[in-house]
Length: 209
Ligand SMILES: C[S@@+](CC[C@H](N)C(=O)[O-])C[C@H]1O[C@@H](n2cnc3c(N)ncnc32)[C@H](O)[C@@H]1O
Picture: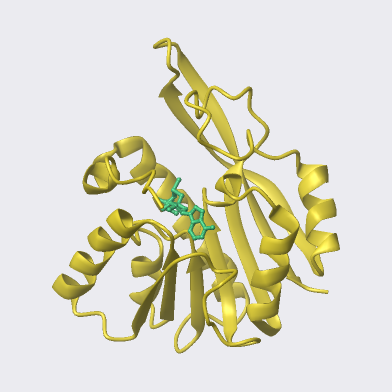
């Protein structure tokens, strides 16, 4: 399978617009986790982890991370960071989570940022994440609100963001109760024509129903 992120992986973290998004999502995830018992000793699965910009910060609070991604290039960057940081309580899984062996009801938190819009069938993916959560666990997701398709002008995404009501309905179908769905950040970047654009992102917190 070709790696759609191969050309960008080594420069992924250097983009300041992306770094600001990572920071904003991390702060919200941390606050939400703290409201729900904290991160120390908790098992956290990051789906579509890329270079680990989020999960490595969570590991810094004592969480045991399982990183999952389909991109060998993104995971190579992550593995390099893990070697440098010597983060012993992390597992890295390469592949589609639908086919990877992760224990049912084994995770306290599932987190994901900007990965769901790459997944064609959202409900089965949400149901899979739901199956990995312990009772009382949480899914914390960040992604694009519906946009006009200019975010991925090359057509590489499966969805041009998500309508919040449609996302609520898909969560319900997958066995989640939505606790929060709110705007949390705006990505500002030029589109393919060079025009500066704003892409609002949502934060979703959901627990097994
Ligand atoms: C836009 S990147 C976001 C990476 C990271 N979460 C971040 O915010 O920097 C989307 C990531 O999701 C991964 N991805 C897409 N579909 C996936 C799937 N079915 N299973 C696992 N990872 C997937 C891609 O390889 C890519 O690393």
